Image (cartoon, rainbow, N blue to C red):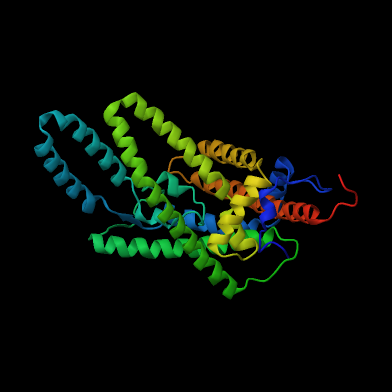
Length: 342
C-alpha cells in the first residue's frame, strides 16, 4: 500500500476522481452501527469508569492544601493587605478543587487514552457508604502513583484504540501483542512530542499575554481569544494523528505529518466532522451529568457515555480509512499521464 509515504504531489490541490471523500452522516451512522454490532468495545471505558466511581479514592487535599496555605501567607506578606481578597478567592477555589479531586482520574491520558466520564466529573462520592479513601502521604509517592497511572492509562488507551481499529477494518485480525507494544510505545512518544511543542509555544505566548495584560486588560482578553482560535487552527490538522499508529502502524511523528497533510490538502471538511462529534458528545454529557454520584442511576450515564464516545471514535476511524482511500486514489489519478494535451 501507498499509505506509508507521502510524495510532494500532496502540495497540489486534489483533482476530481470517481470516488468521493468520506461523508459526514453516513460515517457517523457506520460508527454507531459498528459499536452496536460489537458492544464489547465499550467494556474498557465502562470498567474504568466503574473503578473510578466505586473503587478507592486517592486524595491529595491533606498534602497540598497546607502547602498552599503557607504560600498564600507568603504572598500576603509580600503584596500587602490589598491582596487579601484575591488570596481568599484563590484559597476557596483550591479547597473546592482538592476536596473533590481523585488522583486516580489521571489514568485518562491524552491524546491516546480511554475516554472516561468520571475523569471529567472528579467525583469522590458513591452509593457505597464506606468507599476507601487514601491520603497520599508525600509528593514523592504522588509522583510515583502518577507515573504508574500514566503508564497504565496509555496501555489501556492503546488496547482500546487497537480494538476500534480492528473493529472498523474490513479484514479482521487477531490481537498481535508485539504490534500492541509498538503502538503503546508510539502513543507515549506522540504525547511527549506534543508536550514539548506545547512547552515551546507556551512560554513566549505567556510572556506576550503578560505584556499585553500590563498595557490593557480588555486588549489582553481579545489577545487570549485570538490565541484560542490560533490553537484550534493548529490542533485541527493533528486530529487524526493517533489513527495512523493504529490503522497503518506508523510511528508517532510520521503519523502526525500524515494527518496534517491529509486534512490540509485532501480533507478540509474534517472540521465539520469534528465539530459535529464534539456537539453530540458534549450535549449528551449534560444528560449524563444529571444523576448524583450517590445514586445507582449513574450506571446509566456510564454506559451511555461509553457507547456514545466509542461510537464517535469508531466513526473517526472509518472517516480516516475512507479519507486515506480517497487520498490514495486522488494521488494515483494525479500521477496518471493525460491522454490528450490540454
